[in-house]
Length: 132
Image (spheres, rainbow, N blue to C red):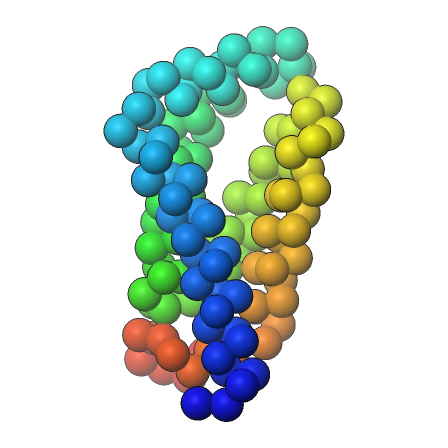
């Protein structure tokens, strides 16, 4: 395996573990996480009818994206989904003026974009077809 492919896999695994870990720790306490998120968004213009389903879907989405990236399955789709999740989180952080969370969300987005742009380096993967 070439150095570029090794570097790619390491970055993929790092962002995968971040997503997987976020989802994994939130899933067992899903209701508490949802209540926490609802509390944070009370001061925003977003209605509870939008925040509530998102608060339940987010940990599942983080977990699934992380797992798919860890095992290298549906990598392209998982990278796109990860970036979309981050864009939604950036919007939410902006709505509640949680500016300190945005740099981390932007870094995750940049990593997803990088991995998507260089998908042809994804040599260590369970994806059965060519990943370009």
